Image 1 (cartoon, one colour):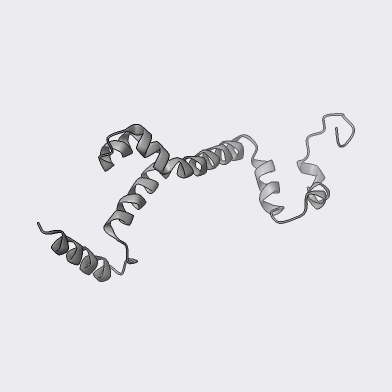
Image 2 (tube, one colour; image 1 turned 90 degrees about the vertical axis):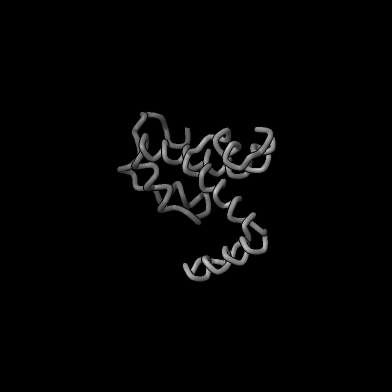
Length: 117
């Protein structure tokens, strides 16, 4: 198949489906990013994209690994400490000094230690 024919049909189909305009290469990157966010391993993504080396795939998508890692840590924290996750979500955008004052006392664990230690 001629590359121009593939491109024209791709553009026609994306318009027909009312999808945003993307280049084929961007679609490839989008797939890899979404696959990584969904939990696919870098090795699987490397194979799908046809990269010769694992390093190329890892270097290209390292920024996404940090986001996936953060999301996994936040999901784990929400399961382990649901009250704290709710309190943190309600305090977004407040200066640090106001955060401590605005937390509901009933959500605090009484450790017997003086406040601030």
